[in-house]
Length: 260
Image (cartoon, rainbow, N blue to C red; front, top):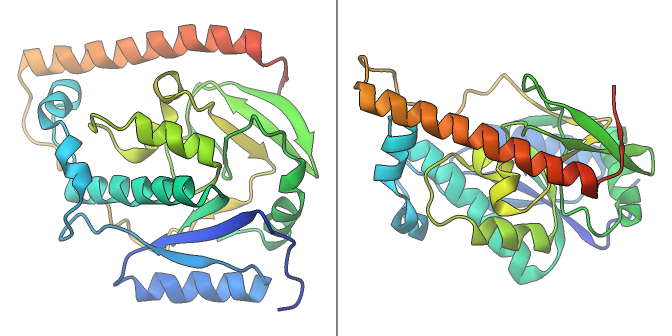
């Protein structure tokens, strides 16, 4: 295949569901035209598939902290990424993980694959898309190829595309019991899982809004009891406090300069 990036140590996985043929056809065409080798990774459809992750889903903790249960789609999405982490651990290989509803910049993607060997080994996981969450800070750490590694003080709340090493995969796996938050929030909780929340500049993955989400969210019901609302507010505050103090420690560890 012409113009194939040199990727002996990095595999590209596209997470998809068996029935998502339109998504598969679109992203396959894009990757094939770019000359990027990849494999489809068959995910878990939480609406109908069973998975062992359900055994560690803590519905009572979920209700205490968020006031509503996780949807089947959210559980299936978590189980799907869980299986990717387990695969990464078993294979002991680095992977770029893409969800099937993303678009990407072809030149930057190829450049990333060609230059990833220059990335220092202690960077375990990189989000490949822009962090659009509010009120976060970013610090530039190192350069590799034409990219800069960014450390975020607040996670980007998405799993649309990321670079994953076996060390990060094992940490994500080890911190999944109990499951009570969506997988993107689980990955964002670096003060719990020990995986620094890192991105790159320029980012080259984004969401294709032509496809509707398969995850689904619970519709808001009536006003929740005061105790439930207080529990939720307490959990949110405790997360912010833990993140703040963890960031203080990280600021002493990472000596990068703050980005624009």
